[in-house]
Length: 68
Image (cartoon, rainbow, N blue to C red; front, side, top):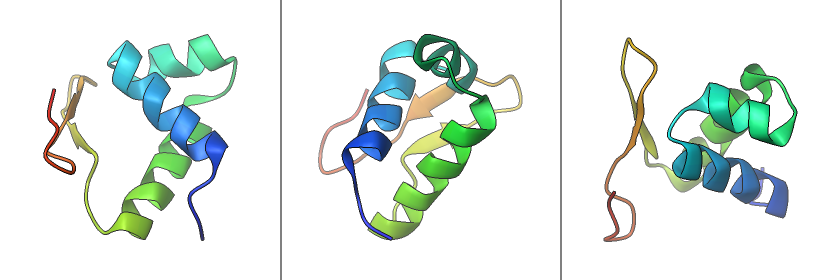
């Protein structure tokens, strides 16, 4: 597994839109595709990128000293 431009694009879309479902609508793809790619990215870097809540809000956690 490696970091590629598509995975970074998914990460950026979720960060920008605040929710996976909104990012999926923006990118015209399924939310499950984005979820899978974010999980692969998290596994690769060994750090959770998003805190997931029951209501679906995705909050960015600390990553390389930058937080939302």
